[in-house]
Image (cartoon, rainbow, N blue to C red):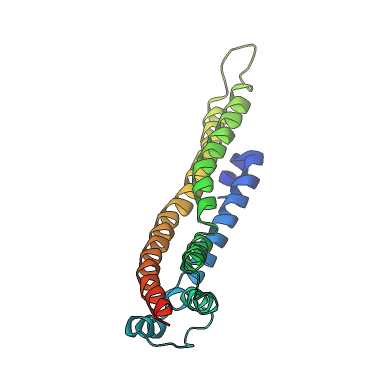
Amino acid sequence: MLDIIKGAGLLIYPLALCSVIAVYIIAERLYALRKDAVLPDELVDAIVEGRVTQIGKNSVLARIVEFSERHKDDPEAVKAFARLEINRMERGVPYLDVIYVVSPMLGLTGTVFGLLRVFSQISPETGLPDPVAFTKGVSLALSATLIGLLVAIIAVVPAGYLQRKVENHAVKIDLLLERILARITKS
C-alpha cells in the first residue's frame, strides 16, 4: 500500500486533500440535511393543520415560519427567504462536483509524470530498460490514476445522493410555503 502511495508522487498531496475535503463535506451535509434539521414532522403537521407552533426551533422550516411571522405583509420576501434557505442546504455539494472532476485528472497527471520517470531510465547503451524496474515503475505510475479514481468515486455517489436530498426537501418546503403564505395573508 505504501508503494502505491509513493508511486503517486507529489500529486498524492492534492489527492489526499481532495479526499479529506470530500469526506468532510459528505459527513457535514448528511448531518445538516437530516429530516429533523430541515422538516421536523411535528412542525410539518402543524403547518398542514394551520396551527402556529414553536416546535423545531432550529430547523430550516422553523426559520422560514419565523421569518414569515415577522414579514406578514411581504409574501415575496418570505418566498425569497425560503429560496435562500434552500440555497444554504446546497452548501458544499458543488465542491463535491469539482472534486470528482479534478481528482481523476490529478491522478492521470501523476501517471504521466511517473511514466516519464520510468522511460527516462532506459539505458542509452542498449536502448532497453531493466525489465523488472520498468514493470515496477509502470505499475507504480498507474497507482496515481487508481488513487484519483478512488477519490472521484468517494465524491460522485454521495454528491448525487445529497443533491437529490436537497431537491426533495426543496419540493416539500415549496408546498409548505403555500400553506404558510395562505395562513399569514388571512391574518
